[in-house]
Length: 67
Image 1 (spheres, rainbow, N blue to C red):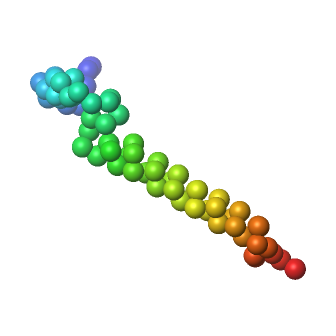
Image 2: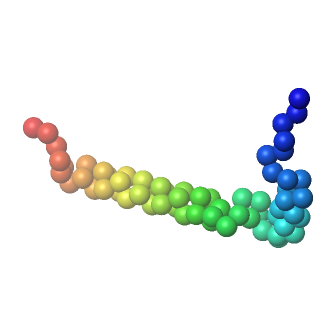
């Protein structure tokens, strides 16, 4: 007993042809891939650099020490 395919074969072949014809990096081919591959890592890097910088500034000036 076999299951029906999740998607029709014609649709899959059409999508494959589309993605194989696009001349970009593999991880930037979809419509929202720039958000997940570029924007989120940049936001995480920027926020972590800010927090590290703030921590170094606070340590060097003695701000936020518990008595």
